[in-house]
Every structure is written in C-alpha cells, then in structure tokens.
Length: 392
Figure (cartoon, rainbow, N blue to C red):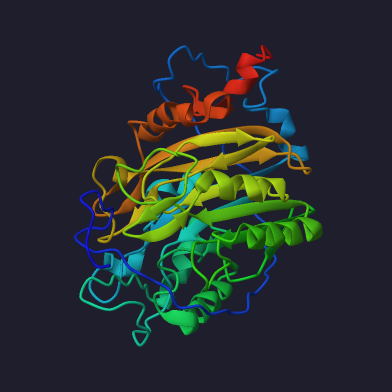
C-alpha cells in the first residue's frame, strides 16, 4: 500500500509496509540513573464528576515524598525521531534538541520509542513504489539521547527496520557507545541495574523481525522470561491503527491500510498477566487512554513526542506526554504523573502550557469504564476504581 489516509500522522508522506523477517543479537548494558522530578502543573479539566485527590494519603495515585527510598520511578515517552536523512534534519546536528523538556526527562529509568534507526544505510528496500517512507537518522545523533537523559531506547516499531538488520546493529552500536541499551530486538530482554533492582525492558511490534505482538504466545513467553530474571518488567508495544480518528481503544483487532496492527487491550493484558509491571504503548501517533489493570498502569499510546520535519504537529497529532510511574520493588503502583508535551518549531518536543495531554487522558479514560485513569489538576494520576471503592 502506498496511499495516505486523510488523518495520516506523517507529513505529506505515505505509510510504509514492512514484512521482511530477521533477527539480531541484543546487548545488555547496566545503567544507573537519577531520582524522579515531579512536575508542577496548572489547572486542567477533569472528567465529569471527577474530583482531584492528589495528596490524599489513601489514594495510590497521589505523590508520596516519603516513598522515594523504597520505590522506583519509570518514565516513558512515545514516538521520537530527530528528522530523516538526507534533507529533513534539524540544524546544528540536533544540538539542544531536547532542551525544552530536559528538566522533565528525569526518572530512575527513562524510556523512549526510537522511531527509526541511527543508520545511513540506504541499500535496504522494505517496500516498493514512490510511497515508501524511510526514517533514518545519522548515528552521530546518539549523544543527543544520552544528553537528554534517556536510559533505554526501543527499536520495535514500523520504522526501526528502515535500514534493515545491519541498520539495527548500527543503532545498537551507536547507542551502546553513549551508554544506552537498545530494546525491542527479536526475542531479547534488556536488563538495567537501578537502585539495587534489576529492571527488564522488552519491546514488541506487529512484524516478524521483532517479537510479533500478533502472536500472543510469543508475547507471553518473552515477558515471562523477563519476569523470571528481573525484579520489574517494562513492556513496550507498538500497536494500533494511526491517525486522529484512532484515538480510542476499542478492544478489537485493528488494521491500517490492510495491515494487521494488533489488539491493544489484548496485548497489554497478556503482558501484565505474564509479569509486566508497566506498559508504554505507541504507534497511533495520537494519545490514547490510560488503564489500570491488575494493579498496573497501561498507557495505550503516549502519542508523538518528537518528529522534526517528519511528523505532523497539528491538533491531536502534535500532542504527547511524559508518563512517570512510581512503584514498589514488587511492582505495586504507588503514584504517577503526566507532563503534557507538544511539538513546536517543526517537531521539537516542549512542555505544553495548555496541558492538552491532561484533557485527552481525562476524556479517553471513559474507554475503560471503572478501570480508567484520569489526571488531576496537578498532573498526578487518579484511579477511578479507587474513588469508586470509597478509599479516597
């Protein structure tokens, strides 16, 4: 397929078709990082009938300053791309690319979805026709992610293989040189040592050259293996159709231009049932709701974080979020917060003064009924089922 949907998130580009299987060997790197910085916030609209409960000692969604020594904070962002070679790259080789959000990219583990390889290889053909889209960044951009504070980047998405298997290795080497492991390679688990804990990160996508999320047994096996060897498991899923008309989680299988993109609810629940402790979704290029399932947080899509000269930044396509989830060493949810972001000046990430992500999450919480998660007027997560249980 080479056509473009009217709601396509790519700027004047058609969507790619990627179907070539391969496997590459992952590198495990040990990284230790800083403590969480909880963002402040201004007023954001709440769901009808919702009351802020931030700060309540009985609310698991509140911020607890006494919890830092006994908890770990894991944060994530959605689709992140610093342009595309040869002629859609930011000035100055991307110097200062993340400056507008650098104060908020702070957690014990900071995760990002890298939407394209760090490789200049152009000899790999993933589809035919003029509509093929290739997102490739120079390998020497790797330090930009380290400077920003990322601890692990994910390659399991529909552009991570745009330079083929050798391009994945290029990406792995470039990030390894700056101390960042690459998750999402087929069948592999990345482990980080943080605050005396082992944190495993796994990534899946609806393609055979990654662990294919259309194969729920494979998802279950990979997460179970990670859970056996680590204290905590971070699960990344590139799932779902794309565009402004695909903001809602339906619980059904999704397609995009005839390509199977999986069932977000089914994949996320499978991962948590197998041992995942937090789920970061991405792929639709818009924010989707946050769900509380079996004591764990699922962000079904964190939207577009950065997409210089590549991703459309208008309306819902321009909004993203930095989601921070604090949990016990056993994975029990303690608190969470959302820093709303949007893309500016052609695709740079910036904190959104309009708090658009808060409004989106509050609206989209209805997709999950009592399991929905909203955002209070200080940016903290509010669990609807906790309120309904009368514990706040």
